[in-house]
Image 1 (cartoon, helix red, strand yellow):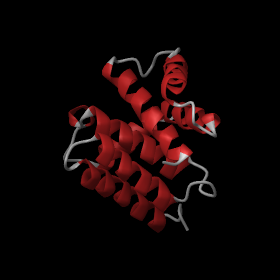
Image 2: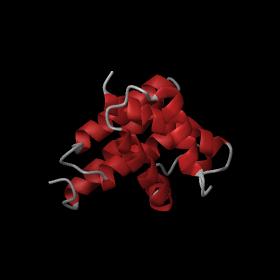
Image 3: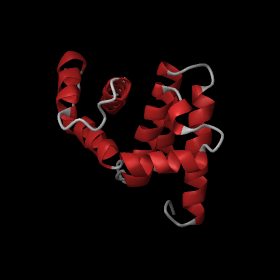
Image 4: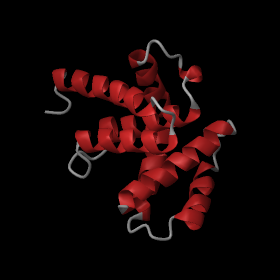
Length: 146
């Protein structure tokens, strides 16, 4: 398994823990990430990648949640299960704010789908693909991904 995939797993785990405990706004959220890296991420070649993703998702959380709410109209944000909600936040962050020279949009989408399949329910992969695919297609029309 690649180091960046492992980084995404640890970030997802941390986002899940924080969301479950209603601590996403906690000023010490980075301590949770550091604890998870210490416990599970010794093999990470780029621990700063985890930190960049994590801090980015937290910084853009409000905008990420607005995008999710706009695109997944059949699913109010609070009704989306915790894993899927945080996979969407992570995938959308990489898709919209990530360095596209390092992680092309289709890679960001595929990584999010893989995380959903690993940690989510039976239909999580399809749900994540649908939401991220819609955002990607809209972004192509608006010239974000050309």
